[in-house]
Image (tube, rainbow, N blue to C red):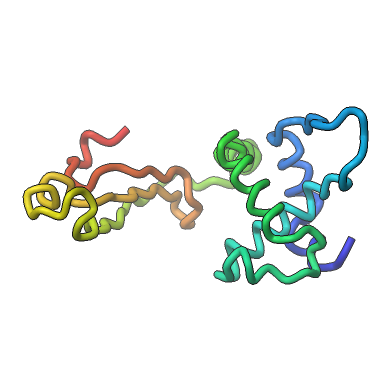
Length: 160
């Protein structure tokens, strides 16, 4: 395993991740085909794309798996809500020894206006659907506790 993979996915993160990722099912029990790329390498590649800002196609070959496989694994794990479960497990791990500072939380959001023509292009459609809002709650130290997505025309009291 390369140094880059070990640096992006330290052992402590890997242990947490293995708790939330669903078991791999063999789709070709008779054998054949390519060997399945490792989850740790795929996770490292996903973290690299998320933190570097590069596109999937720009993924360096140093990770091993090709970008289409990494993207498929990302999409699969997203459908299976692995990221939400990993976030929850990480918060539980930090909260158990009291490393989360609940003495003060901050709530903020970003609103993004709907693109023109997002529906049928009429002004009335744009006024009904003003866009989206991404509310974020952090602890006192700025650690994200919760992130949501809602319509920008919803009042904050209506958010769950």
